[in-house]
Image (cartoon, rainbow, N blue to C red):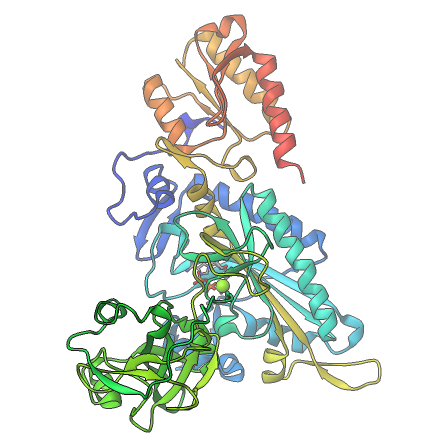
Length: 579
Ligand code: ATP
Ligand code: MG
């Protein structure tokens, strides 16, 4: 392919809203163009990348026996009423929905559990047809609260979604294990460094779930990892063992302490320097929303720990959880914000505690009275210990639950997510089959997503430098770039044409920069920006069949023979892009 014959434009300026390098570089290189918040045109180079990722995704799914299909993006509300998810998605604001000309409500699919369950309940009748795993690669629509980071969090994006259907729970687990391996193969083949982590199942529901995280400092997700034990979990889900000093304070009676203006643990530690953080318990007030009611929930935890709202939301089985506002705090405590505690809260407040309060003795907590705290409070003596569970955020340095290692916090970009859904959708939507004994049973489901467009962005987040993008060879728009120093010079024209032909006939994707009115300096700048991983420069020595070998990164420039350059490219492509 000749660059002189392509629409190819690069920009010096970064978009003003580019917060991460992948966004800035893709926009500068003309790979993407913003149409609106979270909406992008994929330019020709970008489309090549996306199709390469899709190809890898297809090959790995097909090889594992999955079948590709395509479902409509427009979905009728009725299906979502059957699964019970319409209200929740509308409430969250994530669903693009509208009425058609007949007045029927429809949405643009943010995901396809309902449609696939409908398809399978019409198609599958007998255990003899199972197991089956179906997938599609298609555009998804989500009216994200904060579309950002370019292709990372779009409102319209490309996803591969797969769904498995099995006769039993064990068989579902087998399908899930198979897909986990499919995912490992896909991300390895894309040339990404990634970590598979335990994950929360979120609104989709179900039991077991793992996410595939591309390791990147700029990732939106925090991950708890332990190198000693191999533990890895999304911070939303991660659990740890919290150290207690075991110190036993004197058993004096609980009493009020004046704490004027002391609203944070820091303020309180200044007032009570001998107490130690383990004896400070904080109480955080939330407003929890369910389908038919709301309630204020007070959650206690140790002063040095933070609460994990995902764990709380799951425990409460609520739709939404928000920090209580000042009015709600006053109604619950009768005091200014900053003095909430478990003793003397309004009766309709539900009290919970994070397991970090286990073993807290003689502690200090809010007095539900402005400028006042209670000190020397004991569970069991002064109040019952509230319902306690793990509601905490894991912190760096915590011990793993097994006690065999220490937790570190790293960051990642979620590119894939796999779930065991169980019978949640099949029961709600009556998707069943007849087993060997002619008994009607619900299908066991799994679902598996990959953000195809996000994979492309995360590859650049992981691989770039000052000069531009560095595409991993297997998903690069072209595998090799031939930079012709001066187009129109006979020897250079001839050698470029020969190299191009040789490489193409070996199945290599070649791009030749044969632009006429562009200086070598500008060509090299563009070459660095678009990040084609392998590079051959054809210049002055073309007559002697000598070229410069200068890969985009991780290699020295070298003058080699044209034959040697060809061999190197073909060997690299074979080594890195093989199945
Ligand atoms: P996130 O937590 O990032 O919002 P999610 O958990 O809602 O993602 P899933 O429903 O699990 O996402 O979707 C499967 C995959 O689709 C994700 O792992 C991610 O790679 C991708 N994805 C999700 N939302 C977006 C988006 N707004 N833009 C681009 N890719 C996305
Ligand atoms: Mg997810």
